[in-house]
Image 1 (tube, helix red, strand yellow):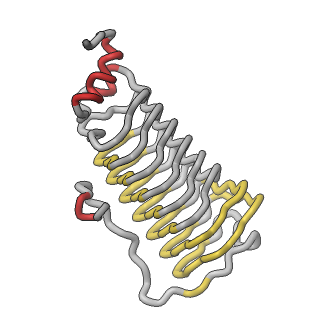
Image 2 (cartoon, rainbow, N blue to C red):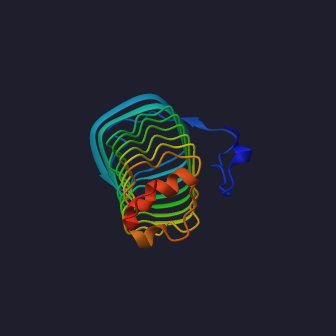
Image 3 (cartoon, rainbow, N blue to C red):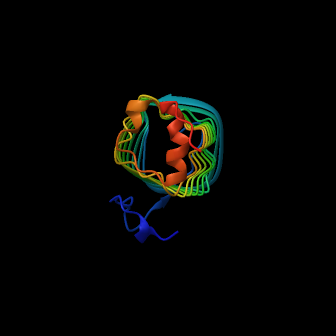
Length: 217
């Protein structure tokens, strides 16, 4: 899908003209470490934990994170492409101008995270955990969000395009103005107040009518 079809204004990450090659290893993953102005590629990291790390103006390509915990992480102008972030713990992270492209993000933990101008494009984010996240100007495009958890989240100028939200949980999240018409939302978990002002197509409206106890023939 072409970027011009995205309605939500989201700035792309901003990078320096010349980026250094960064060798990321366990020695780099320590509390309050700053990684900046570089490219990290073809890297495998396993069983590391740190808090308050910062990645600024960094491109990551084909990086695999396995059993990594990076709580209170700060990502500013960062691009993840073809990376595996499955089950990584990014809880309470701050993301500003970040993009995830063709990434595997099954079970990623972004609970209580703050997302500003973030794009997810063609990502496998099944079971992703966004509970209590604060999202403004965020786009999910052609993503698998099956059983993802957005409970108690703040969604402002958040766009879902051609994404699979089957059995995603969005209870206690205000969905006013969210357009689901291009998505599969079968079995989505919501409360009646949550869907006031949501944008759906006719078939989706029939599915959501179950919340009102209606039987549509």
